[in-house]
Length: 267
Image (cartoon, rainbow, N blue to C red):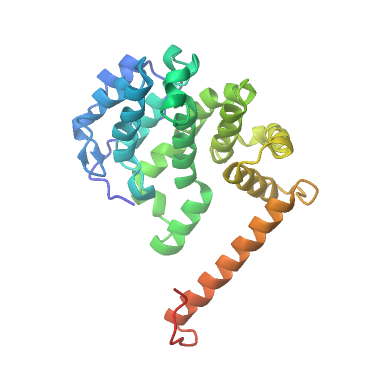
């Protein structure tokens, strides 16, 4: 959590601004990042749509890393997120990464952009807010303006992610689904829950990606669906493994917060 010095986050837009508007009308140098200000962000953001996938790969690190370091949201996070949202349908992104991209052994740029948006949305989801209120009091979002600004921007981000749920490439549509799950916690988007549940069932019928399966299973359970018939042996093993880890963590925390003392910490 960062402490905002002033009201700098842009208001939630009625529609997504153009790329040039986002670049030119944002006072990047005044916005905080994990390592100073966002003065260098416009150059890095522009390179995200470079025709060369190697250049795009480097730009991903330079543009996205400074605004989500250690799962925190900064003053520059929202304008970066809106820019990323605006380029999801850019020709350099939607054309698909050619053979040169596969030679770098990196995931396609579109998938990585979606993944970043989803991870950022999870960092600002209702569970994170609830945890913040437990530790920092009920006015958590009043003091964390950057997170509130991102949460307010979820509808416009979702509007660009939603069409990708039907993408021809399975990795794109599955990543879009995982990205959409935390976005639809916004009150204006909860009506999409049934549609996402259908997409989740289709993902579970075909995907072996552990991260994707965990995310959609958790979402279905949170939405009140019975997932027992959707889990495979790998899901069950993973669930049991996570339960063991949580139990070990709880025992470890108890030893240091008033529980019985243990001479041998479970390293």
